[in-house]
Length: 223
Image (cartoon, rainbow, N blue to C red; front, top):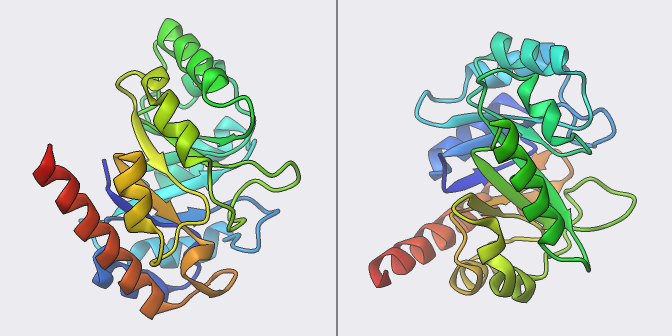
């Protein structure tokens, strides 16, 4: 669905600049507990300035299905990112709207993710993508902490054919190495390209996109 996503965009100017830098997905954060939170009215202005070729992704944490569906439809979103404790059964409440399910993966590794996906398949609600972020008990994401790349490499087969999005502490300086080692289908960053929470450092965005694009090109040419 996408290869390079910049999450936590909060302004029209940043949305335009991120798209111009070459990212193919932009994340809008609807979690009120985040410093990157966007009220719906403000999000409408940002979403309206995202080029059609760039995916609009809405991030939600334990929000009611009605609120998620309402935001998805009103803003013309392309993908729902669930970043809370939503069970497999919850995905069915979102209808046919595509979902990327995020997991903060700690010491237990990907086994719990695999069990979640298995239940989704039983229910016919399998997400389009799985995002793996670093685990911090008191934070939902955007922590700047890297995920356990070695564990992801060792356990990747547990995800089956579900596309893997790597997040967690990715910057322009480490994203190429992350792609070479983990071989994800896509990468996602928020804090790694910011001057402060919610405000993007556009030079960092450009360098991140360039580094990730080059790494993916090399990965694909070697396959």
